Length: 597
Image (cartoon, rainbow, N blue to C red):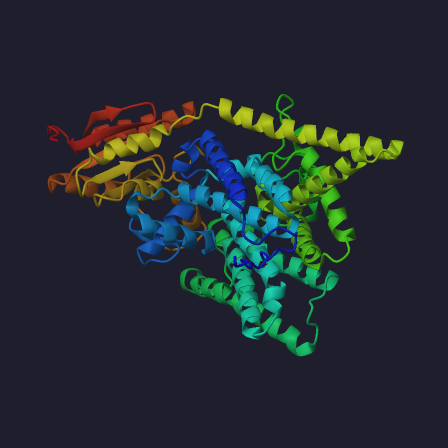
């Protein structure tokens, strides 16, 4: 007799697919992740290595290093410590990678890794709710989103916030699934606690992400929880509140330490004229009036066209590429929302979509009143658009195949099915053109970072370095030899590597602030005698003194540097050591005293 093998059927996800992905599905994920790596690499690493744009990337990286060194999420340069403009969420993530990899770690790789994890988790979430085809389209559309690709190669908080938001969405789905709603109740409460924790952490990455709670409120109203008795609702609210409060309380504590008040803002500390009490950070005028940087259209037009995939119409007439996702994906997203909200019995899917839609509406609405405009601001909430586009494309193509199989189809059905084919073609062409443009790019390396790496082997330990390059940038890129950096001047002409922070500190001092500032050789047009004498004393004590100059980008700034160099030559012998297109290094010695290496 042969024994019959009994096997239980695999557990199924709400979409009807097995819970565990198949080998083919893992292969799809790997292929898309490889595509992400190629696309991000095509964007180039120059701006990421240079921590551009400043001061954002520079402050995030500096805060992470100072967290690892025990100072907190602050800036430290010129021997003094100052608060950062930004909250501590993203620096905490960077600190984690910094501790794992040591001083050789480049922060841009954290953004790339979190971008890849965002694609993976969004694939898993979409597959769980809507199936393999929808998940593939969702992940592919996100992987080829220009704003996603660009910010995955920068030390910016937008992609990390997207990742944390997707984690929160996964917790929401898990907390309301059949597994979590079964006894014991502590399992369900722990998942709601994790949802609150991710929501709170997202908020301390960027405070405007507190609008995520608006999405939660909308989804609970539109699709009530299964257990709606008062004790159960109070337990859920308490779990979310505790989780949300943990990171928020930590941030408030850090604010109190470094800013003097739990509710003080680093933005207001550094740029009080914009973010202080008299500033106009948010205004109704920005709905249709000009905003920064260089947006004459107003926020409403920019964000509406972005959500419709038509934002390329507002840019360069010779380059009509989209920024977030293409027009065909926007149409499929509308189809997806309609199909999901109309489908009976898809409670988890409807709850997820209402959550994402409420969050997206609240976040976009808030940024419509903001003085700055950037499509990346709404990227964290745009996960729901990518899911809807994938679900809508999958549903539309299933319907289209059914129409073509039906010989009794009407003319209207045939036309609509043909329209789906046109949208498919437009989507493929849009995504393929983005791949072609990215692959044809020839990104340049960072000449400045290469120059500083070369200087790291040239400069002796403990040397004094006078520079017009940002002191905070030098502290991060030349950390190993205990160098002492001195600002050449407090002037910031707005060039790539000039010192924004030093300039702001001296501006604050002019308004009555009496905090300590790093000394500069030129505080105005004339040399500071005290600083010049301290450099001369260092030279007399056999401490080497160098002058490191970033190449000027304008004739006016070149004139300023020439005047300062002439005055230095009146007091010191200035001997050229090395020079390239980005920077020049000189050795300062006492007059009539030969320089020695």
